[in-house]
Length: 120
Image 1 (cartoon, rainbow, N blue to C red):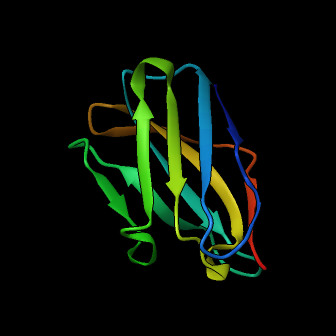
Image 2 (image 1 turned 90 degrees about the horizontal axis):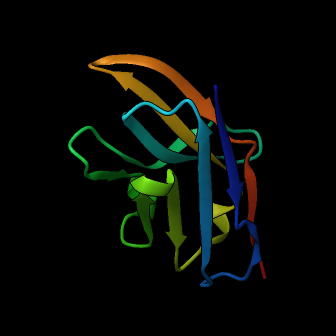
């Protein structure tokens, strides 16, 4: 099993910044992909940013140039730096970890979510 604990959400004014952090523990394969998703009220959960098999990062179009994902593999943590926040970024943000064995998905794990509210 894998446990993911997110932190760093909160209330911020438009144009402000927040940094989300996710710490993973448990049975983590040497090959794993981590990323961030968000879910706004009444909407489906959507990708914000994630690392791919090549090690590069993919971003949702709406956050490109404003959000940056990074990770510390030694500590099994992933960060999401969010700048120039907009009201439409308001959502619950979830950390995801996918364990891989070769090309086989061995399981997706989710954190409990951290709420981000962008409002004046």
